[in-house]
Each structure stands twice: as C-alpha cells, then as structure tokens.
Picture 1: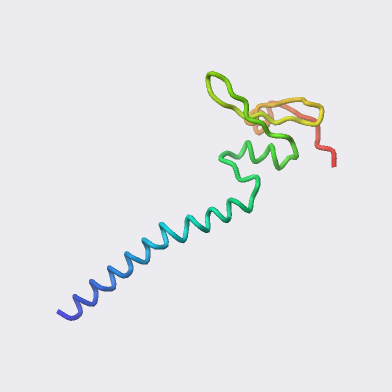
Picture 2: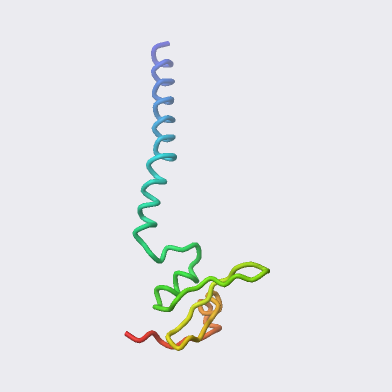
Length: 94
C-alpha cells in the first residue's frame, strides 16, 4: 500500500513539473530566442528576403496581404517568387 501511494505522489509531482515547463518556462525561452533573431518571421521566403539584404514590405489588397522584396533600384519581387528563383533582383551592394 505504501508503494502505491508513493508511486501516485511521484506521478503527480512529475505531471506538475511538466505542466510548469510547458506553460511557463518553454514559452518564455522561446520568445527570448525569437526576439534575438530579427529575421524570425513566419515563413522562409520572408527570412530569405531580409537575410539577402533587401527591403521587405507587406502589401494589402482586398484579397489579402502579401510580401514583396525591394532592391536598391526599387525593383520588386513577391517573396515566394524570389525564394523559388522565379523573379530576380539586383545583387545587394556590400
């Protein structure tokens, strides 16, 4: 009987510890990691645009929003077209 009670206490403590990690510690540290990376956006096409040195803008239409990359000559590519090499921009001047 004592072993059963001890096992129950261990299980309850383990569940509480996991709950604390999942809902308090992990989100806080994930937010810190995301805040430290200025290119951490929701999709790889946007990240590619910014890391390539282009200006990123969001355009709004009545059908929804889309992102564009803009080079120094004001040429534009939709971010996914640039990501898939279906649109070319000038190389970024270093």
